[in-house]
Length: 195
Figure 1: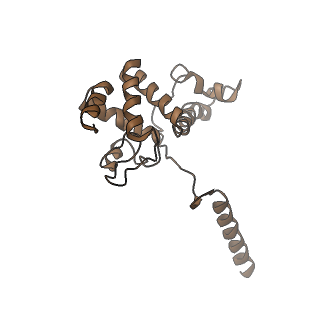
Figure 2: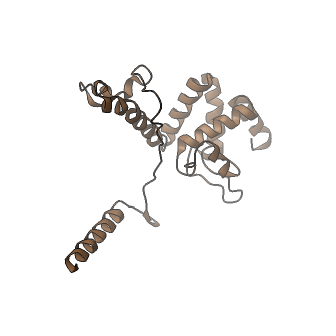
Figure 3: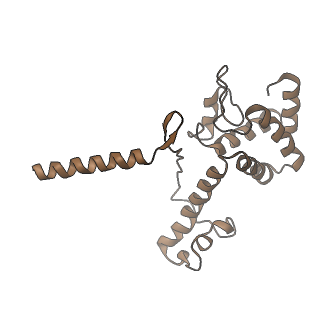
């Protein structure tokens, strides 16, 4: 019994050390890595390689055709999708990456032009400089689109504090519902310093 307790205690110490070693040092002490949650619908049909050609299982793992097995079929769709989503979030944590992801969503999902992206770029550069951690201490506005109140972004996903893609999706949805286009939102911002 004593030996068992000793091993449990040792594993507890090892787990604590691993947890702390995963923290990143910063000027303010320890900063823990950002995490995002991805929920997969196991009932959905498998994605074909035409839907995500660069992110299919074959593209990820070379010549291995995982789709030929039942486990591989699930893996090639849900895992490729999870990898693709995770990669987009990580890309969007930088200014240039956030612009790239926003442009991609604006073009692919909203069918808008380069001119609309130019207006969006001006708007969100003024609002947050494309920083997903941006927070206005006076008003509480948060994120790339400077949502106020910030928790409104929760209609897209609960990870709005740390996920720039969630913030971008909410911001584009807000703009299209309220102003129709980023250029109309930019015009409003120029008149009143908010949108």
